[in-house]
Image 1 (cartoon, rainbow, N blue to C red):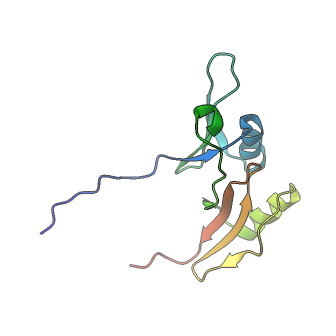
Image 2: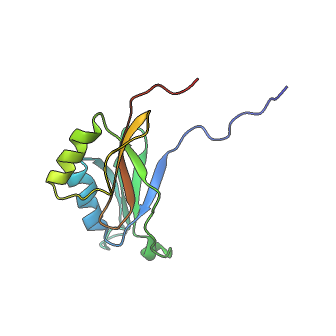
Image 3: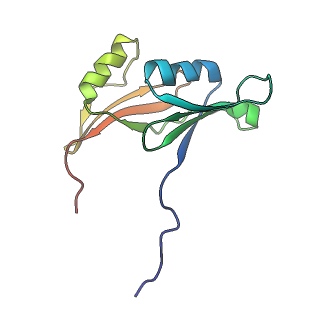
Length: 133
């Protein structure tokens, strides 16, 4: 009989590196429409990062090199839930966003891959089939 309990109870935030916090903040707020909840700033210095809310997980943008972390774009996509992948894709394309290939239908979800201005991999995602038991 196992008496173990889960140590992890959720995901609080996902960090994405940026070389230009101001440009990244514009993209995540003006293009993706996410609500900015905080800006990390020391006095009059340029911001070190910012946080955006998705409703379930916070997206944390960080000026990685200013924090001593070599910049390397995340190449594994962060999947943003949308109600309609095709409609959301069309809206982003109308704003000049390019997608990586066609929309994918996996048999349980629709996915469309793109990148932010720093080259971080992002995805529009909608699961249309129930999770397996």
